[in-house]
Length: 164
Image (cartoon, rainbow, N blue to C red; front, side, top):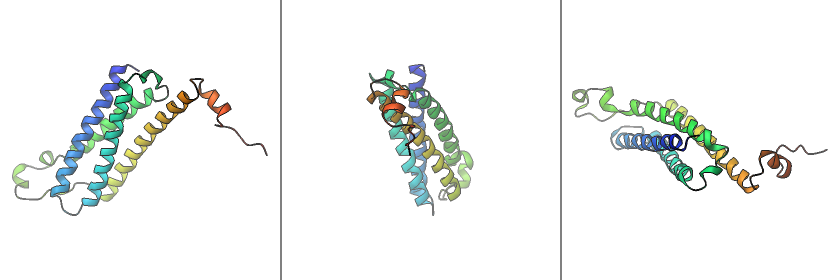
C-alpha cells in the first residue's frame, strides 16, 4: 500500500464524516420528530471519524510498517466509507433537494425514514468492525514477535480443535 494513498483515503473519510455530522446537526436543531434517529446517526458518524483519526495517526507514525493485516483493509474501508458518507451528504443537503424559496420560513424535514437510518447504522457498524478486527490482528501479530499467523494458530490457541 502506498503510504500517501492510504493517508489520503483516511483524511478524506475524516473530512467527509465531519461534513455529514454538521449536516446532521443542522437537522437536529431544526427538524421535527427525528431527534433520536439523528442523535444515533451523529454518534456513529462521530465514532467513525474519531476511529479514523486514530488510524491516521497510526498510519503516519513510526509503527506504520507493522500494520501487516490492516494496510489494505484500511484503504478499502476508507474508500467505501468515503463513498457512503458522500451519498449520505447528498441526501442531507437541504439546499440541493429543494429550492431556497420553497423552504423559506419552513423547518427542515428529516429526509430519512427509521429503516433507512437502521440500514446506515448497520453499514457503519460493519465498516467499524472490519477496521477494528484488522487492527486487532496486527496487534496480535506484533505481540507474538512478528512470527506470523501460523505461530498464532499453533501457540496461542487459534484454530485449535480440542481433543475429546
